[in-house]
Image 1 (cartoon, rainbow, N blue to C red):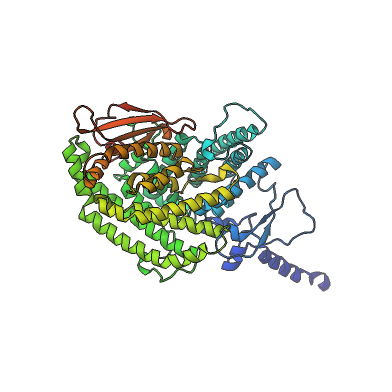
Image 2 (image 1 turned 135 degrees about the vertical axis):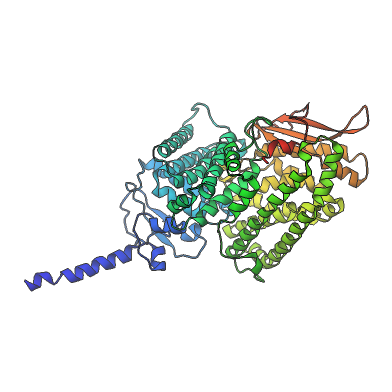
Length: 608
């Protein structure tokens, strides 16, 4: 009887060896037990946000209708060997080949050159695709995005902002659009049946992407509102600890990545409102939750910025960065540190009482005091020193990348990182707006921004053939072009920025880029009228009174400025509005009474 028992020992040994051999790459590197869930290990997804998958030996003949080859160097920015990943359609619950095709289209979109270059970290490139593969609710949302992308790919439009959604099927290609709507509704249905806070957070990001992609900015704003309200619950409710504990074993870096998206979009959502000024506050659910917690938007943004994304501190910036990943870690830390100025600004505004005043003298004196405030100046001076250290350490690396292959993804990523840096360094230094001469001295910085923006747009135009790939939720390029048209004192640079907005192809978050262009074009006329009288300082201080808001989800622009009365010869505050419809290059601006109570327009939009 001894002989039949002998094979049992090597059999147990082979079983153990087989399990170790088939574990995911990430767990092998970490020397921990893998749960061997396919196609990605759940242990890795919840604790690290991504999994490098499994190595599968290539076969001479494919065993199924689909076999995807992933280059991990494109999926994750850390170096990893090239691998083959085979997807089992049954295990992933894809109903048919079409739904699998839509999912592949979704992955191609979120790993595309524009959305990946404009974002930070691996949330879009790695985490969301992997979570969607393993989660039915998220997978339907992802397939809906993929179906929309397929519809865009087969459209005749070259620009995302030129696309209009069909009300009824007009051709075979419209089947993709209506299939996308079906997937969208199914994801919402699944979420309502199996309510999960984790799913709700990621679903808000995916559905926000979906609505932005189809140009429904009002619905997109609702998802921003909902996503921010969820983050309040995660971080500030009495059960916040339990929520976070159930989210993942190490959830804060993943929540931090999601928070970065909503920090960026919350700024947009305070000037892009779904209805009209005076008919409710922007982001109502979010604001209500904050008020219940006796918090402000500014204080909550600081709280979000403290969610860990990297282990570095801005106090120890290296002399020279070795690669873009290293720079990005320090850049995220520096950018998040700037959110601390929000509560300072809010405190100064509240103490001034300016929001309840209609008196021109009071408002003008407020601008003088605010732009010259010593607390703001101290904060901005310290921030500028940090930014300059980052710049000195980044420029050698940046120049080296720019001298490399311009068709590489690294090249476009370096351009976008530089644009992000300049976007804060140039535009968020509040004291510079006090003095006209200081703004004149920043002209070289404005011109550098325009040059890099031109390169980024040219590269995108060359590389991107599908209009859907012009989408980004974290790119501030169009917004910063508008700021150039408003604040740069070089008229030629302002005109260049206006022209770039005119041909801007993409969709940056909830901004309607046609509205941004319409406002820039109208401001050009205002600048011309304003320059006809007074000293440069007097002209500049009149421009301080410009205010604007984008109503109806961005389809209507309200613009205030000082205009000279033809009868009295006095400069008085006026308000105009324009409806932005279609591709009209010069919308009709109609003069109207001052919106609301006639006080500062920003007071109608801020929650104090």
